[in-house]
Image: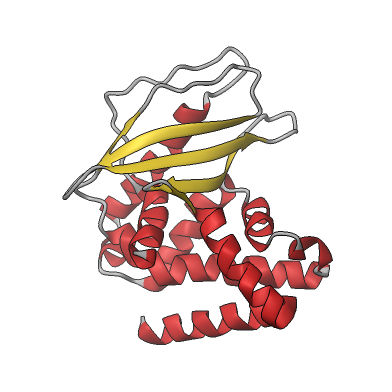
Length: 212
């Protein structure tokens, strides 16, 4: 169940969006749901055209994530939220290592999900938000093989002149990504401290790399 949940979380960042859905554009900039549609369409186009990614080339998949996905994710906030109170106690170097290992964990363990998007379509639900809102939830449903999958995104509008949106959490099948990891990370920190959590993540990443 845990593996299926996380596979769908990564898959969420690389799915085709329904081109028939017209997103509203607010006067003060791009709407949050239009933003999600735009970046996922960009990723999908790359997936369809890159044969190496379709065959599971890990280096190409990581490059895709780094260039197309990560710039649109507030990964520092995602990692900090998953680590919880321990994040504020961590040194800048520890925080850097946590972000690196957490990203590698998500990408390497579940990168295979990104090669399975050809038969998926996403329909977006009406966005319930006001133009002045700084944090919103974009709700969608993924349709492919099997039962439809609930897929929601939490986004924030960054406080700079660009007013760009950033994704900082995903909800798949009713479970939020950050909360799922927060419980696991808290147990590691309580038992081994921040360095222990970093070591555990690094070891898991090495193990996953050997399998790929």
